[in-house]
Length: 259
Image 1 (tube, rainbow, N blue to C red):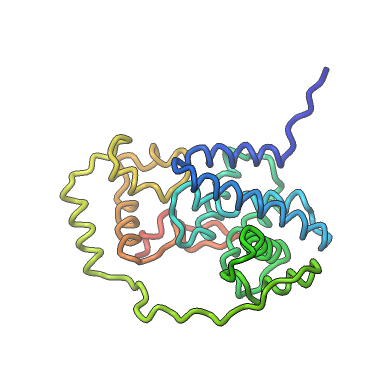
Image 2: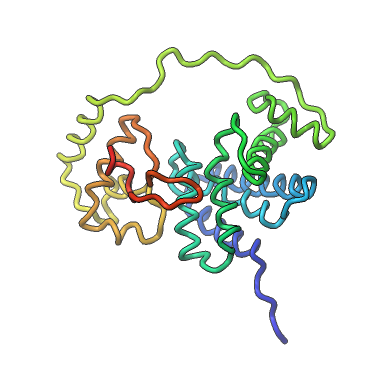
């Protein structure tokens, strides 16, 4: 009796589950699961509505926030998430998707934080699904109300509350602090970090790079990762690879090489 191979969707579910298994905090793990699978369902619904590929849309929904869940690092997670998936397509998910599908997936992840801009159809589908899931998870909250949710609600024939006025911007935005950068670097340098798996400081330094091979690749060559970590802690937000777009591979693995 022959056994049918697992579907692509089930392969992605297994990959996502393997990452969620690494989330220690039970509430964070639950939130990751609810949001990711919820967005996947919203993606499938909107894909059916818009005549797009529902399977591919669901997979995009599952993958869109994985970088943040794996590393715990939220800033620029859409750009970094696209890079993470690019590498995953070379190894863990090699041969699962065509080149064209890979571009669609990477592009949607790359752009999904740019909710105020318009991009390609799968990019927009993910943005709409992201907003829709947040709203449906807690319909009493007005945090995600706005023009995008209003448009999706109209498309689906459902009602949503009118958006309230935007909150005032922080009068003191978190800007890059050169002095803080120096202090962070000096403080870490005094710890004589060895670069082992048991070294909490070292593992924290390389946590931005999500590949399973990151530890071995950075061993005895993590100076750029050190600079990157210090920059991030000092609020100089950089992507892990730059220059980078969803369609083109970047020239530099660590953004801090250019900083």
